[in-house]
Image 1 (tube, rainbow, N blue to C red):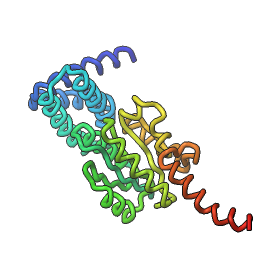
Image 2: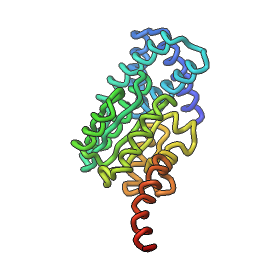
Image 3: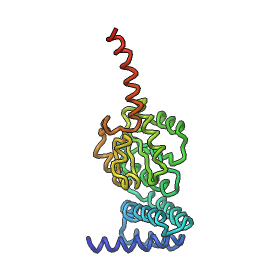
Image 4: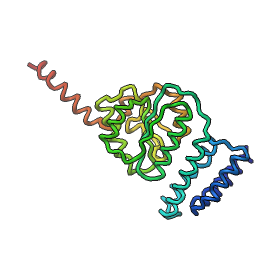
Length: 251
């Protein structure tokens, strides 16, 4: 196991350097060689592509790479993901459906795409809407597709207001009551308890964990105490409903 971990570490380091340099030929040759030596597509996505994606984001946040380098690397990493996704072993359809939204930046699009690829390979019917979808259109799509699971993928704090607003609305009007809501991505790993705070039923740090959590907890729902988003408005509504009853009793 130690030897395997060392090999993966060396592979990730070389892969990341090729990506940052934007070296498409060297990157594809490295992936090709790894597959020829016995690596499978699932492990390549989860143990190479995903951690490299997170490492690149961290490097950019800490000013170790430029925006140009991040873009070169992220787009090439996504190209490799497209290639590996076609090689994933696919299970039979399980009758469950997933709708995935994500933030607007390229790394978040890649994370959302990997979620879509892994859920589809696991037998789910998947729709990946990506980022930048207006709030009303997102609600319309949810109503039309009526997924078993809604996944909100995010890595950056800038995407949190949108996620909060969407979950708040879904909870407030009880839209799609049988649908679970999952928050997935680096922001929820770095800010422990954030997913629960905004009312998500499920939380996962990465795509592989998201599929596992969805499979193991098909009926889990956030408690009312966890759903802090919109709670003040709900309290006001409840008080308004009780007010006429209190007046009638006093009379």
